[in-house]
Image (cartoon, rainbow, N blue to C red; front, side, top):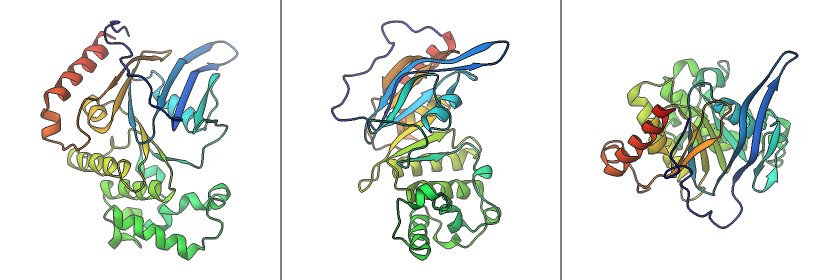
Length: 280
């Protein structure tokens, strides 16, 4: 993928303070006895506090690999990932994730409330709330379920919920962790069109909450979704992937699905991104 020098990496000077998330020269190579495959090469970017960054790129370029590295699930071959300035070696406790397939992320035999509490089944997560009883955690989970509109479904099982409702359970789970960074792996791709738009708005509301704002990193194939959801869009090249376009979204923070998508600035950035992807 080639992008003209007039548009490539069009990023303003970095903001002051330590980024919530920072990638420094990250590369990933998968090797076997017969060959090596470079998936990522020299990926560097940062996410500021309260900022949401969308990652676009062609299928198979390494977006999912990048997300697994960011989550501390696999190590990079080169470079490093920092969260709040510290190099990560495992999944940080200050990180939450919205997966692509909500059906695989919820335990069908557990209630909605107990699904929200899944992170606290892990010893590492329990250590962040050592003085909280299970009853206290359940009470807090119910408050987060109310926040995403599921107060009346606290005792339901996932099979009793629609796709959009299951996704809201995962949003409540992310909130429950009190993380400052939310990783999102195409989290709306399995939803119908109307539910998808509503879920986008809900996640934006969660990320921009005045009491506890979260930074976000969204991996998506949808150019319109990337622009609508984010403050910045990063376009990756074909494999081995590297950033070839990094632009801020010149739109007001208050957005809605109709007027924002009709805004001339939205349409201009959409055209620029689609042109860059088309030129490949």
